[in-house]
Image (tube, rainbow, N blue to C red; front, side, top):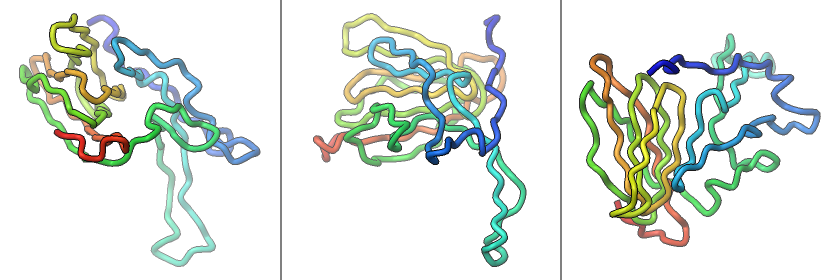
Length: 181
């Protein structure tokens, strides 16, 4: 694919990231929603450089240096996207796909799936219900995808070399606490 270049905005300074009101300046980028899947490209996320030194704290808890923190989704007051309202933690998985492998199509009842690509490239296959058209989307490092509960999806690494690594977070609908997997 010609547009496979990983592009992420440069991290901004912590002072610029938080406004005078202390609220994070995040998630004002458009979300790409296709067939119910919320697809957030790496370029639509915000990164902030945070310094960790707190001289008022004793060693070794002071921290040192700085790190770049990428905000993917937020439900904090003032920055809430409303995507995860009414959800609670169900599971966290690390998914590693070797070249040419894929997951089987699946749907989780009562559990939304949030997938974040950590390394490599792949493809998401999605359809809202059995028999409906399949929508495919490229997955690249830094992309985040939210698949709603009950919708069918699979993930593949269609590359010839290199693993695709992602983190998969399951979020249970609090209205369906026994949501199956």
